Length: 296
View 1 (cartoon, rainbow, N blue to C red):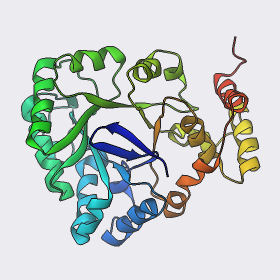
View 2 (view 1 turned 90 degrees about the horizontal axis):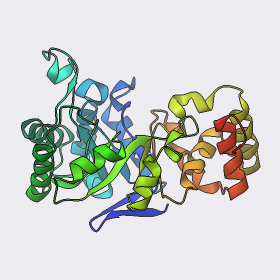
View 3 (view 1 turned 60 degrees about the horizontal axis):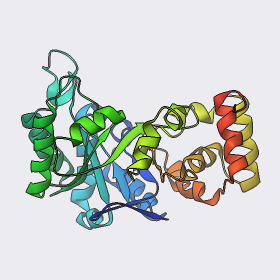
């Protein structure tokens, strides 16, 4: 599988395996989690996306048990995680409500929690999970710089930020933000024209795309976009998921789809998307179907 350089010291597989449902699986045993990891590695998928809040703050620990049982796995993986969401569950069960916390104290404690839960000594990429309307960008930026300088975090970025949020935080930092993980798919095409993709493409940032299957909606239904996906899928001998991911892979911005599924058979087929080649007219047939009308 192709590799993508996000920074001088960070390289990702072109497709990322998302672990947001890892703690929700009926089988969270060490053996089953390791089977998922190996299924990814066998396809050249080496990048794994986590967040402290996933599974009600337990998904990182589920991964950590698998890594403790086989320490050699860590050297074959790039691990992404996120912080800043506080919800009244798990370790934050006593929180008065849900809110975002981008204070230095919270970021530093979140890093320590993630390192401990995942049984690792460094995080390859730490993302601020959601833009914080109460953020002191000087404090947050300095905390992220400090995290990188400590060696506990290799690189930093953001998730769900608009360009103005990104620029505000970056303005207070010495360390470059290397990516932004946003929702983008055939079910959410706004970033192609609302300035989000253009901003990051202009700056040479590789966007990470969460929910590339539109929250599962692209796998079901019989609308125009599904018919076009089915036609392409049939031509390449793949399923709709592969076509949806190929749509993102084909874009010149170098988008990194984050694929999350607990189904081992589906995990083994994630790389099918790399077999699908979309020329410009075919890409536009998908885009127009998602748009609901012909381009102007």
